[in-house]
Length: 237
Image (cartoon, rainbow, N blue to C red; front, side, top):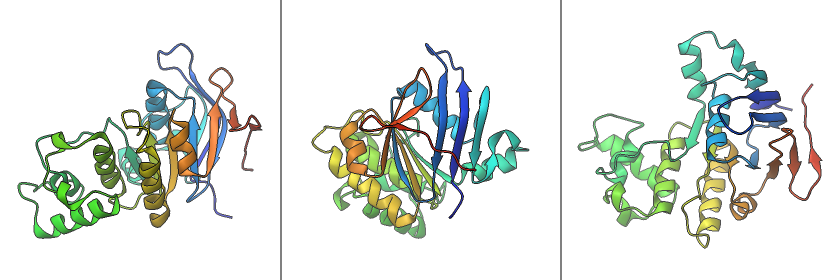
């Protein structure tokens, strides 16, 4: 069996909230889909920073691809680690005045006015993959609806085949009627690329539509419960 892409053990991190972020135990296998419920947006941001090595825990350990983030030696090693993640978050900046294709070309080139033929072709392939209509390709981002923005961020996130796709409250501003379609697209894109998927969400309908495990965090103890009430604790030895 392959080693987990992510393991967390006895984690605690103070960040100025009512209580620290605590996670007693979590392991995510390659290609697995996991939804985590119970992290509000500030706590989700802290979680993402911890699992990408952008910050370190006050207590406990985060292990990525078999290596503890506390052992990262320098910026070169950290940047190589970050390249293995794709992040779908409102914190990922979109260029509002630029078109969908220009924004999707950004991972491939800084020459986006206009993109080269090669960058445009790759951007168009991403747009199709994430479910954007061809009529949206030349729209400025400012003219896109909330689901369209999520799709653009998803395209940016998977441009370089990440090992782990992190979603940070992606459906917070989406009409609930559209959520299942967005979830299905996210799930299929991650599955086609063989990426593990970790969704931080308060949207139970979205979590259910993604499939995989649904875990709910008890913020006071850091323990994870599988949806349905069974306490879930998973360790790798």
